[in-house]
Amino acid sequence: MAGALALRLTGHLRRKQVGDETTKQKPIKVLMVCAMGMSSSLLENKTKEAAAKAGVPFELKAVSTQEIARWDPTLHWYDVVLVAPQVFYKRKSIEQIAKPHGIIVQDIDTVTFGMVDGEKLFQQIMEAIRARDEGQSES
Image (cartoon, rainbow, N blue to C red):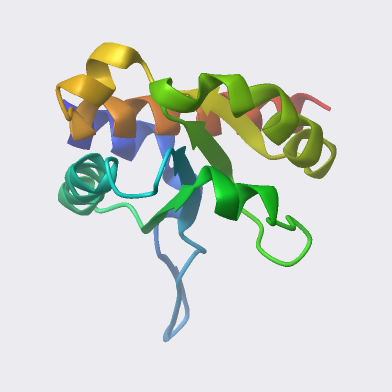
């Protein structure tokens, strides 16, 4: 399911053949914020596995709330910032930093986080990217 969903949602991410030259699109970049940057490591790995299985170029980095406080989106841009359930109180401050740069900020569902459901989180990310891209193409 995730593979089919990813293929539908990431047409813009596939490699394109240009004569003899193959160009590679940039990976989806995701930043995951949790309390210490450690509890999310299992979910981080499972989500990366889901992206690899779907053939989607993907980078995911987990950071602590201390690290996110020093984050500068002009230096380190991400497509999506995910906020873990235990630090939901940080979402508003993260949005204030991210939104002006067109960066999506979303909560990670408690069940998705607790069950370490990388497939579901990957689907959430892809749906957010698709919605963003559809909104840009309508402009």
